[in-house]
Length: 371
Image (cartoon, rainbow, N blue to C red; front, side):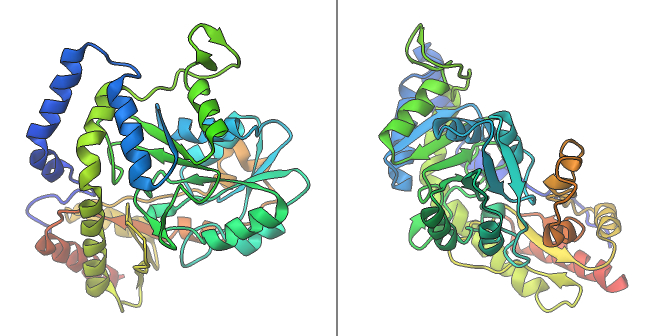
């Protein structure tokens, strides 16, 4: 029952075609300006993104990874400090902690949400703990009420990893605006993506924003008068112009993703071998990730043979990666470890045709039933 046309995990073509003329005008405007680094487009996008999110400051940078590093550096986190985070995430989350010289402390996730467990996070706090770094995985907001309460009681800072959650909401607020700092990614596949790398730091704190702005340009608040060892981490004018075109459409795109998620739930829900994600308030479904029983890798290979592409986010928890194996040999995160063997992300984009969804679901259900 192979599909006639291969179904990708993500198709950016509908978005590109719909915005083609606007994107070209924006790109031409930048090219003709001959101003390509930290110019009017970046300033305008920072203002528009901050306003959109309801934040005081937005600081453009080179990538989501850099946004995490700049946030941790701005908060003064470094050698000797511990940062509690999830092991079920892309490596950049833990990498940023290690890059500033701090120690990542991996705490297990909730089985249902796949996000950092706030109860276990509290048990992991030590005198060296300086911050929490929760990840709004796949666009589902973390239990921020509990995590912010924990941070307040124990005197901790909070950096939100919003790489997959631009536009996600919890308790009426956007993720990235609840902690001291929020870090966003504009990698092309994100809900709000550019056509290359890009990132954003968000904060309501004037001093933290000023520090992040200085660190992104070699630790300089005034050109050639460097005050700290910083980074060359600037959001390009071209990427900022592209993001300015896209930002007004993000609400509609996120609503489209939720529509796709609800449809998948109806098509796949109830099958004993497939656990579908809950459609909770504020979830923006950067990925639609199911859990499957049995041999997940074999199922994925058979789906590919039938013309349906899928992805595994993530096959290895961070505490089991080679560089952390020895230092974190004592760490046990059973939920994260089990999820790494069960998760499978299905094709999703805002314009995904319902008929194509039915094909994906039909192939998956058929293969799952065969075992």
